[in-house]
Image (cartoon, rainbow, N blue to C red; front, side, top):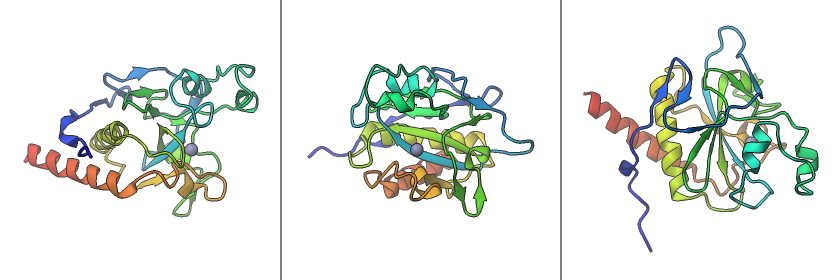
Length: 205
Ligand SMILES: [Zn+2]
């Protein structure tokens, strides 16, 4: 049994508030985005799970789906998906590497028909983070570390977000979506984000 890596090992991430881009992340900007409705700020973080083909990790296919360039004939599972116009702000790969598709200030198309605490159309006011995985496969330590660091950077950059407003796609589209699935360890994410907030407060203090 190896102990879970200490999340202090991950350096704080930084977001350029002017561009909405994560400094140092691989940028694969998608045409699948538009402006948020006037006056709308990001108030919710939505965690997703995705793999392409389903259950397989690695490869270029998530980038291709989220940028509208998935070749329909490359795999039987791609035929229907190739016509989808979907995106997310970021993807966290199995090794913890973060890819950004849409600037955080813009509206990505990740939630679909959705509702959070009585408000519909969650894309308008949320940030979508995909984790490469499936509902039933444990997500990796590297993914939890990267996700906590990313959430912390988002909270630091956008005061309209709050640690208490993080939901799964399954929570905002119940019955229609199941990701990130039972494999996702919510208490672990919440504890890790809380610990980072305490450390950031002490560093400022
Ligand atoms: Zn999803």
